[in-house]
Structure formats: structure tokens, C-alpha cells
Amino acid sequence: MEFVDLFAGLGGFHLALSELGHNCVFASEINEKLRDLYEKNFGIRPKGDIREVPIECIPRHDILCAGFPCQPFSKAGDQLGFNCPRWGDLFDFVLKVVAHHQPTYLILENVPNIEKHDEGRTFKAILAKLRSEGYDVDRRRLSPHQFGIPQIRDRIFIVGSRNGLDRFCWPEPTNVKPDLRTILDEAPEDVRELPPHYIECLDVWQEFVKQYPSLPVRMPSFPIWSMEFGATYEYEHTTPHEMMKTKAGRARLREQRGSHGVPLADVPENKILDALPSYAKKPQKRFPRWKIRYIKQNRDLYQELKPWIDEWIPKILPFPSSLQKLEWNFKEGERDIWKHVLQFRASGIRVKCPTTAPSLIAMTTTQVPIVGETKEEKRYMTKRECARLQSLDSLKHLPASDHLAYKALGNAVNVKVVRMIAEQLLHPTVAQVHMSLFDNPAGDDGSTDRLGVATVESPTEKVVC
Image (tube, rainbow, N blue to C red):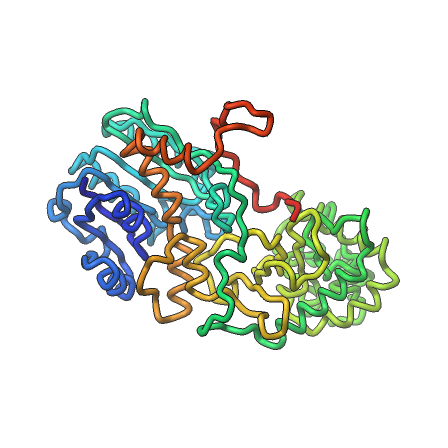
């Protein structure tokens, strides 16, 4: 069958469908460098902005694939949805192509937050519009780690068929346990080492982890915000921003302590907010409940471990605020930061179990996952290693620029996951044979019942290494 690849990026849909024997007749991609790369990899030149392509110029096709831009719906963005001035109308253009060409099958992908956007109204509208064009539709949240691929990347997939979905079954999680080491190179040539100040900061946090009480006391399940160690500013019923509005509030605030316990009485009045954590000086009357909870948990932690934390605080002060926060993102495991997978995020340093990498995101090169136990190995994952997380290793060419490569990989679909979905949708009989060979259908108790719903680990859920 013939398919079109809209918002093609690196060509994840193309790889998945072509591996099943289907032929790409049209692709679109707004980024010119990615268009050049797509042509080098696949021999077909994508068109540019889909909004500028006359619909009648798109060839007839049986399958439409589209990972339409997620920024309008992502938690990491402004969540403007269809009102996003840059990307919000792109689903409407997908719908126009669908209405004009009436392909038999649809495979769409986006971030899971699209289900909740605008209290669910956005997603209901998307499904209703597809159904109005004559499609039976279904959706499922899936992540590569459910299929033995070492990346936790929760995404929602939508399938549509004009022939009904009676024979379609979503691919079920396998018994294959992911292991990040399987996709790492021993001595990569294009390695990008960590800057010295990042290593210094991680060593400071390793000292904190080492001094933390040993088992049976578990590492904190909440993000560790070191700025709350010694802080006493009010947070439960008001905010510093509200207090600064009145003379009495300012006077009360000056009697309290800011980040890492700095006395606000010693700070000029016009600099008081600068002496507070960035998350505590936003212009709001009340903090959200989750923030109140995290602040309280960190202050309780400080009081419990105050003697040695007071000695540790000066060591974390030289680093920027984003490096003064740590998330120990699993229940237990060896308490050695360098033996786990690390990621620098705006929310802090994330430490994850070494079986999987965190989700690749289309942000900056500094948020690429970090691996390595020795000084020589303390590095970012390479472009090729990250491509393997997306099952894109068969691509001959990746972007030359690190920035473009990591951004494109963060926007890509996972080839293996898409292929399993497409196989179930387009070749259901063959797919059922493949899945039975790939996974053991019997449960631990010998039963042959299989899961009907794929469950995805929440990014904040703790796992045991």
C-alpha cells in the first residue's frame, strides 16, 4: 500500500511502514535541513510547510501517518492547543487531507497530555472530526520500554480505519526487560564530555546521597529542593509576592529567611525577592497544593538532618538554581549517582534507574541523558545512541549538528512501536503470529490470559532497579 508521511522529521513513520513493505508517495517537513536529510536517507524530497501544499498535489494514498506538532498540547509548553498561533491549526490541515483523499487507514501520534487539554474537549473534538469523516477510531498510550526498548516515552497513538477495527488489537507489553547498556557504545568517537562544573555539582550531590541515612530509610520520593534548607518564608496561606504588597507584610517577611537560610533582614528591600527561590517569587496569591507539599517536605527533611546538611549547604551554593535541585527517580538501588542515568532539566537534576533512559525531549543539548561511572566515561549519550532509543539506528544519516540531531530525535516517533501498531492495523493475522513469537503468552501462574490494556509507568512513579 502507499502512504504519506506528514510532519516527517527524521522519518520514523517512513522506516516503520517501509519495513512492512509499503511505499511512501509523499512527505512533508517544514525544516529544510531535515528535508535534505530525509532525501539522503529515503530518496524522496519532502515538501515544506503542509499548509502551503495544494491538497490536490498530494498523491492518492492508502495510509496517512502524522505525528502532528505536540508543542500546543505539551505540558512543557503554553498548552494553547488549537489557539497556538504557530502550530495550532496543523491538525485542521491533516483533516483536510483526510477529507480530500479518504485514505483507508490513519496512524497519528502526539503527547499524552493532548487527552487532558482543555479538560478533554480538544481530544474529544479530534476523535469526533475523524469519525465524521467515516473512520472507526481508537487510541492507546504506549511507551517503548513496554517492548524492551530502554526509553520511557509515554505517547498517545490514534488509529483509524474506514473498514472498521474489529480485527485490530493494540500491541501488548512484552516480557522483555529493557537494559540501557544494550544500546551504548563502548568507545564512541563523537563523545561529548560533561563540562567540569557539572561534574563538580554532581560530586556535591553524591556527597549528599552518601550521607543520607542508609536503608531501611529510603531516598526521598519528592524532589529535593536544597533552597528550602534553612528557609522560613511563609508559604502555606500566602506568598512572598503578596506579602511585599503591604508595609506590614514586608516587615514580617524581613524577619524570615530565604534560600538556604539567608536572613532577609540583611537584604535591601528591593532585593528581597531575589533572595528567594525562583519558584517562590511568582506573582500569585497562593501556591498550588503540590508546591506547598514539596516545600513542607523539604523543610521537614532539613529539620531531621540539620547537623550535616548545614555543613553541606555551602558546597551547593556556587551552582545555578537548576542544579540545586535533585530528583531521585526510583525507589532503591545503589546510592551512587554515577552508576545511574542522569539528566539536567529545568526542574533539577534527575537520577534514574540505569535500565532505561528518560524520554528524549526536543529542548537543548544539555538535557541529553548522561551516562558513565569513570572520569573518562562521564558523558552525554551520543546522537547514534539516542537514535537507538527511538529505534532509528538503521538511518544511515543523522543531522551533523548536535542541536538539530537531539531536537529531531526528541520529536521523533519510535520506529518499533509504530511498526507494531501498523502491523496490527494493516496485517492483523501476521501481527498476531509475530507477537506470539515475541512474547510469552503464559503468565507466571501458567495461565494464558493476556493483558487487555497497556499500562505505562508515570514519569514520577518510583521503580526498583
